Length: 247
Image (cartoon, rainbow, N blue to C red; front, side, top):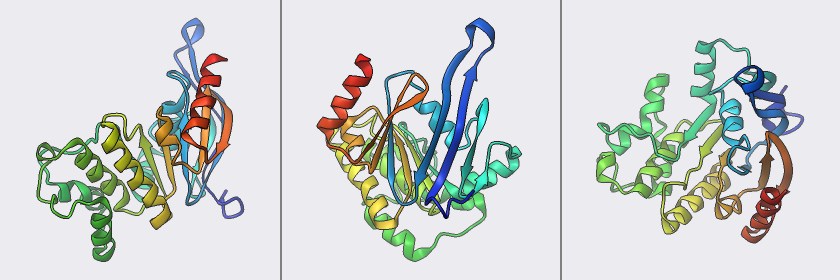
């Protein structure tokens, strides 16, 4: 259902995810429904075990729900064949991970354009030049990951996620492996990708500083969305998290 009427590019309807069977079954998600608005940055927060990473994996088509449905750009992905799902991810989804997931034998530039090569498409020169300028990697493109700092590696990972101009970018704890100064720089870069490119982004984080750059913050608790805040200060995010963990 596109989502033209709602402005949503990702939609989940009554999504559940159960691991295991019988007495040992774990209900990671217990009926989550949401819409992710186009051109916004949505943060997903919650205590350990709340289901936030499970939710992201299901929204991104990396895992299938036990029940319920997920649509991306108007396509219901839950029942797609693996080959069709792979094609959809190449076209519509970018990923940023906590531990960068760069290929060590490739240069920064080769890592960035890798998704395009796999999809059989070519980089758009004007967009690529602008993107490299935004992520600040102009003098690092020929370096391999081992020759880059953690922050530079994450910049490469963000450029790789953005280079195909995906419908939605998913970021899983993108600052979780970085020091505070570098984290601030990476968060500013992610915010800029939303403001400059209209890049719809979903970010899973435990960091109130990261959540404070988001247009919307969803709080998960025990497999359910328990709170939905508009853009909020770091202090307000901390208050909401403390109330959630104390409940």
